[in-house]
Length: 146
Image (cartoon, rainbow, N blue to C red):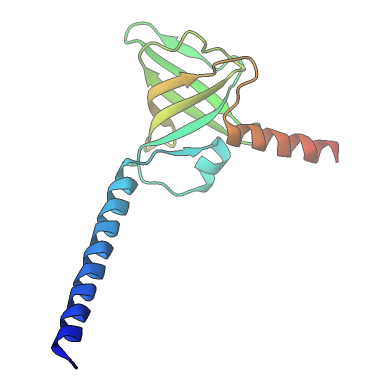
């Protein structure tokens, strides 16, 4: 092989290996910082580690909100009309938080299967539902009418 061609082949090989390593590092960094959204049904069907930060969303079940004023802790149940997940949160809830309304909670799973939220986001208008929850509710209503 001619020396110039050999030099080009080595240069291209090193360049491709460097690009591959850079892409692998970028994907690894993104995987560490992604917050995946789950409905209660998806959360119960998927095996997740307790260290993984994720988001769970659904409707706050009526008569499920319990306040503990001594330590500012709130416990409530969210549902997608198929399954329910108990959420624990310490802090002040958003002003728009109400029973029967859509919310998204960010946090981690607990050992007992409940969800420990570090942040609770409430709906922003009368028609808001997280898209996966809206799709799950639409699917349920279609099967009920069929």
